[in-house]
Length: 314
Image (cartoon, rainbow, N blue to C red):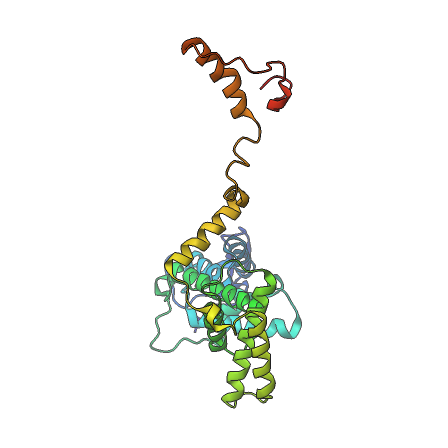
C-alpha cells in the first residue's frame, strides 16, 4: 500500500509545470530524495495523458503501460496490468465508453499500490527496477497473439466457426491430403474439396457420438462430392510417377508461357512478322551474291508489303 500523504500541502507537476493540491497526485510507496513530497511527480491528469500518448505510439495497451511505468519510475507487474485491464473491459462493456474516456492508469495504480493493491508482504514493488516483464517480452507476446488471431481468422473464413482447434486440424489435414497431387484448382473445385472435408468432419462427430445427425445422409453427401471431384474412379487416382509429374509440369509451363500449338506445328510461328524472310532476301542474299558470286536475283525488291514492316521500314 502507498504511504499516506499530508493533506493541505501542494506539489508541482513536472509535466504541466503547475502547482496542485497534494491529493491531485498519486502517492508513492517509498520515499526518495527525488520525490520529497512522497508522490509520483506527475499529476493524475498528466499520468493519463502520458499513457494515451504511448498508446498512439505503440498501439498496444500493455506496451504503452510498460513505457508509462518506466517514465514514472513505478514497477510494471504483469498480473496487476491484467487485473486492471479486465476491470477496464468490464466497465466498458457496461458503459460503452472508449479507452480515451476511461482513466486506465488510475485503475492500474489502484491494483498496484492503491485501495485494491495486489501487493503481498513478500513482494518488493518499489520502483521500475522491480518490473517483472521486459518490453521485448511484452511486444513478442503481443505479436504472437496477433499472429494467432490472424491465423484463426483465416481458418474461420476458410472453414467457418468450428468448436475447437482440433476440428481445424482435421479439416486442414484432409484438405491437404485430397489436394496434394492436384494442380491448379478453380474456386468451384476448391469449394467442393472444402465441402467434402466438412462432411467428413460431420461424419466423424456423428460416429463418435459428439453430434446428432443422420449418418446415412452424410455418407451419401460424401459419395456425391467424391463423384463430382472424380475421386471415386480409383484407377485414375493412383499416385503419379516422377515422369508423369515432369510431363504435367512441362505442359503447365508451355500453356503459361508459350503457344501450345507451336509444339504441334513448329513452322507455324517461326517467322510471323517476316523479319527472318526480310533478312534472308535483303541482307543475306545480296551479301552472298557479292562475296560468294551467287546469282540469286529472283526477287521483287519493290514488294515490301509482304515483310510486314512499319512505315519507317523498321
